[in-house]
Image 1: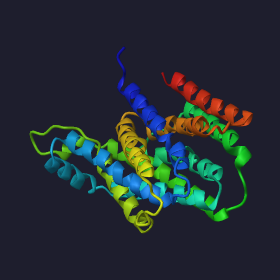
Image 2 (image 1 turned 90 degrees about the horizontal axis):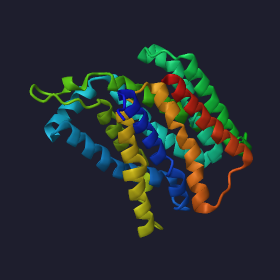
Image 3 (image 1 turned 180 degrees about the vertical axis):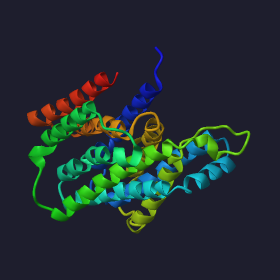
Image 4 (image 1 turned 120 degrees about the vertical axis):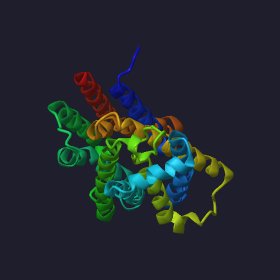
Length: 303
């Protein structure tokens, strides 16, 4: 069976969402550890994956540096790096000042922001099937986490909203960078095509480390078992999936990418349930079903 270019992109984004969804069970396996320490060290190990793939894809360190210089000639690359770092740090900070449900719900408003930005910033129209999938997913997210929502922690709620905006802007900037012909980044005789979004995401991880550095020095209580989880998170829960997502979003639209990525919201509590025995409510199950049905219907209508 031959896959279309878009079909490959869909598989890449869904694979990224699957790997992202292990964040909840990983964090719950490290009780008492500062979330900003987790975020910082996760980005350290993420750099090994993304920088390693990037240099390999470019063919040499010299060509990788050449591509990076070209990428950062565009302001959107700096914007993507900043928004990527803010997305990670703001979301983790939001969970400290409000409930996890509030933080997740507010961040997953990101597709709505992408829909509003797709036309003016990317020239990608939002069609009726995309609005249908978008509203179906947002209603499903609300059903999934609605029973846990609270009006308390207004500061955390503000951070959650900002995290969602940063997530949306990062997706839009990455999609915009991926539309720039990567072959032009290389010297004559080196006709490789590498997304210019890669240098932006790599810089975003460096910024995340710098922001989290004050909390990364307190290693009291970090056991060898916790280090294994941190390495796993960096390599396989963030590094590999963001590599896949960066490749995937070059083949699908920004809005389609974030809609497909919402499968993470369904899978995340599933792994937590398996690991801890936490059973989702009937309403949560209905919300998860609606999210998957909306994404499935969108994929069927897109054919």
